[in-house]
Image (tube, protein in one colour):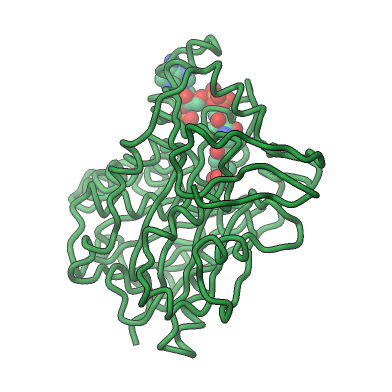
Length: 385
Ligand code: CAA
């Protein structure tokens, strides 16, 4: 039985900042951000948005009444959760109006956990082929004002339906996972921004990619030429280039050039929103499918990475008609309003973090389908907009 991704959708906030303006404000050469790091625009998060509203906005685009009936499980993967106990998936299930007879859970392992969600969903569908699983990767990447990581912030969610006879990507059975106990990036319970050893994190990411790819090739005997593209978790677009070039070296043959073109197509969306943490690999997949040379029958290799650290290399075969089930990125990226650096800084400081106070946010001016209206009695107040 084929099992995999049946449908994909993306949502981000309705505000962004131009990173050349951030460079000017931080007294940095703009080429460092746009070429050295490889980011052009960054999603800006108003206080009325969090991972629950972003997750629900992405998932809502996928749902029809028939699909909603078949969903047995909702998995929200995130490393920017809003509660240490209650799963974000419960709030999302409520906002989407799904019935009560569903299983809801939140998964965490830095930027990796959506891939765990996808693999767990495959298991559920294998046991119960009539069921479908809604897997949502939603995050707000926050490093702090004036930090080296600031240029790599971002926000958004990718939602996918996992089912039998998938119409986008049938996931193949062989995959390689690798876990190492390291401290490259982490966020203690008392912190609203991540701690990161940035240079170390980029080198362990590359090492992890090499290790899982080498082991995959040992297990399958499959040459790189068997792939039409390699897709990466993109904390910033240059990271994918570093990892790809680490395995290609000086190669300039047809396979290497095809991978380089595919990488550029997969980076296009990330350049405009920034790091999505759990959703980043899946946004790269959507971006490749909409901007690249993808064709039905192609084999794609996907590298998922989460600091701490966990990596997985897995593969999938593109299905006939896949393009009809990858919802357009263009509308989510186009219908946004540019804000100044001063406005970004103001909104950054307004995000609901560790405050225990009751608070009301004005939701005027937020065009998202779901909003966070504030907090009352320690409970977040969500509503349809
Ligand atoms: N023109 C063109 N390029 C320029 C330039 C200019 N004027 N000035 C600098 N550059 C280049 C540098 O040469 C460098 O390129 P290379 O990496 O190819 O050598 C690049 O711009 C970055 O410059 P720095 O080396 O000075 O880097 P930095 O100190 O500003 O920090 C960073 C960069 C480490 C990525 C930092 O942004 C950071 O800490 N980011 C967050 C951590 C992260 O994303 N890690 C990724 C792996 S971990 C992961 O994947 C999980 C996750 O999502 C977090």
